[in-house]
Image (cartoon, rainbow, N blue to C red):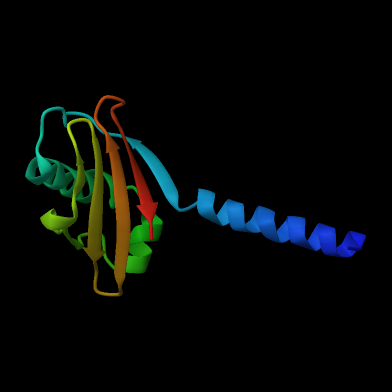
Length: 115
């Protein structure tokens, strides 16, 4: 393998990892201890609509509005007690955004992972 091939491969790998880093947003998330799947789904939906979309202009741009519709299929919520995986779909007039939200109740945080 020549030096150019190695350099090109390393550059592509770095670019792919930098793209992954931009798709995950860690945020503070409190008040979810003791919730069931229905409660955590409602908390994630409320968190996104009240705290995230208003502060994430790139989401507003992709959705085409700052007041989108969000929903969660309760049958797809996984986890329990202090750790949850929540599929969030957000729809605006210009498109949809799909997130998997990992909620850590003990750590008081959530990771919004864009799909």
